[in-house]
Image (cartoon, rainbow, N blue to C red; front, side):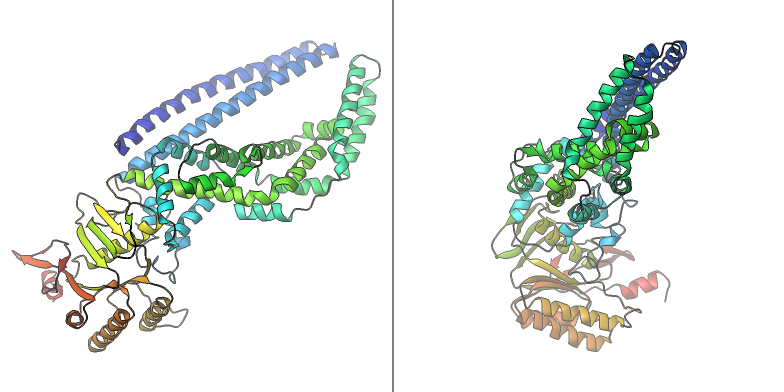
Length: 590
């Protein structure tokens, strides 16, 4: 695979150049637009005595001015799109250098009662979520968090296929992310779908043709006035107020509709672009094809349907222009026509919007996963096996550690085996536990893992590594830990889990802790559980001699030339070197 950093640097350079060029084009259009405005005013002023000529100049000037506004808007949209692309590549370069701690930590998704999310730093400062997340919408972020917390061992190969395919489409992913970044959401998607679902129409069906008939009559009266067949008082004095009167009958409800639609206009415009990107891309993986199929609606594309709704919303928004509000409603019944179009769209497609929003947020989340795979070409997608060895990995490491400094270890743990890991303080036990945990979580999501090779029999994860007391619940640290351990025991009765424990029963005395820890591990092994426990209690290692399924491993520490050294390698056996006393003396605490 090409060097991903070089790709980002080249893209950054390209998009920055495009932004610079488009800024110049916008400036030129602005100057031209000002010139047209001034000439329009001068032309009307010089011909105001001949009102027919003045009107012709005014209409021509307004059309040209409107064209320039539209052109400026299009160029500005392209500029903003390329700015978003440049920012994406700039951020990727920063994150690759280790600068990601100012990004969203995802703390809103943290759940202390979850199977593992609190223990393995899935969310928070320096977390896996903070490092991996590239979602641009709230719904996409939620879907990404849900995927990381799902503990889902079904259809892993399907998710791997989707992530591999998106990994191979860096340009498409960036275009999707840039378009998503431009979505300005005032109202959450769930609120929009709920509003559409419960919306009650207020305009009768005859309003599908009355505005058109009224507009034809208005044009006819205007032509007759221009030809001096009738006086302009007939147009402005009578017919205008008839139109305003008809509009006034529904004004209150139109105002309420306009207030709601004003909050969702930009969402539908940008979502139309996102749906268009999904529809026009060629996918081959089963999961992506399944999502692509969800946005089909007969012979119509969801993007076209969204775009038509967006245009109706924009049209209704023009009522905020006082000239458009008076003459548009008085002569063309524009508010009624646009409101009817909106209501007709809601009656046809309102129930499908939730599915289309879900597809958009799915791709927002999965683009993050594909992006992660692209950024780590040295990682491997685990080979999914039936239940033999739960994990058989070569050079397994923690994905957030610097690869230049990271120390990897081989790990083979069979189904229903239980490892007891001992080691000195800071020797790497807790990091190892989180490494194994992340391997399981990432493999279940469908991501590549930080290893040279990996064979994996899918299993759900449950942990007890970081327990805290709770003043609000009036529970002590020890009681909170017991509650967590009881939760684990109850949960594994229903189906197999990979259990990871770090120094359990810390809230009691050493003798009681040793006895309790031993009995708990014996109970887990008797339940045919698979997992790892890290401990400083060497007496726990004696279980290996009594139970065949228990194996001892350790992380070592050595004192060389009065300095503490760690190799961070997982080794078979029991740790003999502890370092607490040495560190107390070295730091002159005792």
